Image (spheres, rainbow, N blue to C red):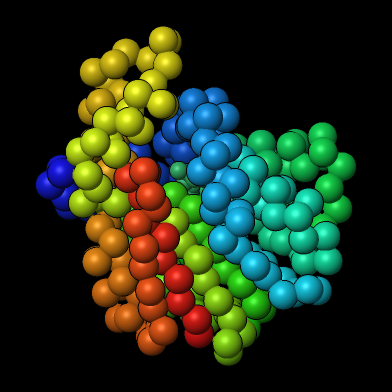
Length: 231
Ligand SMILES: C[S@@+](CC[C@H](N)C(=O)[O-])C[C@H]1O[C@@H](n2cnc3c(N)ncnc32)[C@H](O)[C@@H]1O
């Protein structure tokens, strides 16, 4: 288990910036992780069950894989992916056009100040994004604002308190020959897991943001947790 290194380091602040996602992290993440994470995406998509004809928002949608998988699986649901990186929104739109999917859109917007009215969605999801938000609690309050009463949320995130074995398996799975091993180790520790929240911290943050019906579980075999709550 790694110790959480806090939110404030200079490298962390740079790597969480929109500029970093536009120029470096977006393209690297999308090539390295996005392509290799299909098993994880499928498991997450299977846990989401939006009502027929409802509206679903994915915050920090990145290159859009999860939204597009959900759009195919739930053709009556209107899906909206939001990300603050223009590079990511462009990548997601390209993929959507390529797949010819019509019940899904991608727009630019910040999790700290979502560009949507109150009670706009029946379901809100987010995958591997909250650890990059400068203020997780504020982001969760935004989730609460845009959800309809009774609406549900599913958040999957890297667990800063993950087992060492799960972390090792994760490193090996996502390393690539063209990425220097020590850099990958530093990156995953410093930017991903070491700076993320633990499952317990995420539960507490959801409660502090006004959600009562909060539950969390470990994703078996992965250094991730799944958090669910209802407004
Ligand atoms: C690790 S990627 C995950 C992308 C996607 N959910 C996936 O699993 O493929 C994190 C994403 O969160 C986005 N992000 C980070 N901070 C954000 C913020 N404050 N508002 C909106 N998006 C943000 C980044 O641009 C990036 O695309």
